[in-house]
Image (tube, rainbow, N blue to C red; front, side):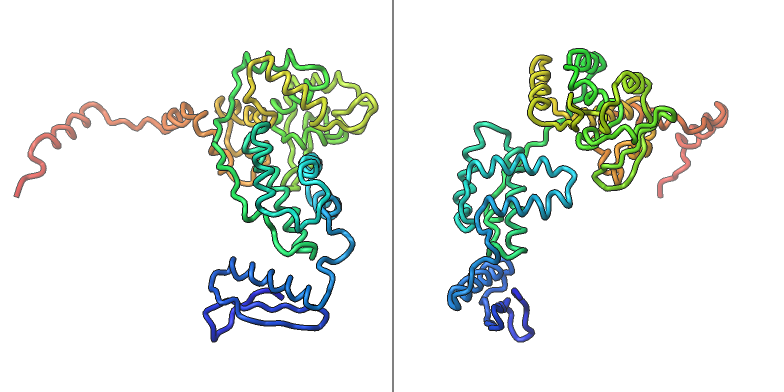
Length: 355
C-alpha cells in the first residue's frame, strides 16, 4: 500500500487498504513528496470513514512511543543507545506525554527555540535527529501517519576546526584530571578509541603480555587491535581489576560518560581554558600526533577503525611537512655538470627555428 505510478498517467496514484476494503485514486501531482502527504491524508480519511482505530495497539502517546523506540530499535541496533536515552529525557521534558498527532512542525520549532539559549545548534540537531527517527519508526510500525520532523529545517552547522593539543597541554590535561577521569583521557590520547569503545572496554580484551587491546564494541562491528603504548601499559598495571570493565565505579559497575563524569570533564576544560575541547577531540589528537610524526596513514586508519582513508583527510594540514619532504625519497639521478651545460646550451640557442 502507498503510492505508485501508472503508465497511462503522469501523476502518482495512491492505494489504501483497510479491513479488506481498498480505495485507489490519483494524487493529481507528479511531486513524489507531495503525493506521499496526500496518500497519508487519504489513509487518515479512510480510517475515520470506516471507524477503524487510527493507531494499532494501545500506545499512541509520546512517552509510550519513546519506550518502544528504545527497546525495539535503539537498544537492539545501537551501541550508543544510552545517548538516545539521555536525549529522549530532554524531549519528554519538553513535549510531555501527549498524543503523537499533537507534535507537529510548530511544536518542534518551539523546541528548537527553547533549547537555543542553553546548548549549541549542533546539539539541537542531534536531538532532532533522534526525534525524527522516533517518528520514522512510528510511521513504519503504524502508530503515526507522518513524520513532522521532516518539515522542520535543521540548523546549518558551522565546521569547527579540530582542537589539536600541544605536548604541554596534553601533559596538563592528564596531570590535572581527577582520578575517575584520568584513565579515560589517557586511553583516548594513546589509543584513539571512540568514547563508547573506551567505556565498554573489558579487562579480557586487554592483553598486557602481548601489549594489545582487542576492540570488540566497534561502530562497524568489526574487531580491530591496537598496540598498547608503554605509558598506558604502566597505568593499566597499576589499576585494580575489581570489575569485568576497565572503567568502573566503586561498586564495580561500568562507568558511562554522563552525569558526574561529564561534569568533571566540563570542569576540567574550563579550569584549563579549553572550553572548545570535546572528549571526541582526544581521538582526533591521537591521529594528528601520529600523522605529524610520520606514521603510515594506513596504519593510523587501522588504529582508528575508519573504513576508508577519506575520514583521515581532515588531518591533511597536520602532515604538510611530511607531504613536502616525501618527494625527497626519490633517488638522486641528477645529470653531470657537463651534460647539464650542454642541454642548457641547446635550449638557449636556436634549437627551435622560427618558420
